[in-house]
Length: 87
Image 1 (cartoon, rainbow, N blue to C red):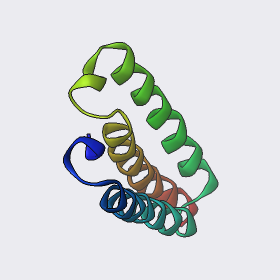
Image 2: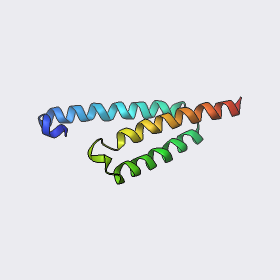
Image 3: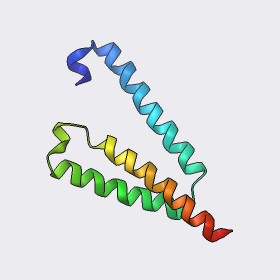
């Protein structure tokens, strides 16, 4: 979709900015998360990607967006649950 709107140089810059923002968020989440919450987020995020793509919603919204959002939510919820168990 970006390629249809902008020229190739601007496409590359925008895509690099989006991917670096995603990677930065993922890295910061991994630094403050427990191993259990990371695996829970990865599993739920992957299931979300598969369901999103197989249901045909991938044409409406790229499947990594809901997968990433649900991944972050699950990691935050798991961190809250497992931090209570540790204390």
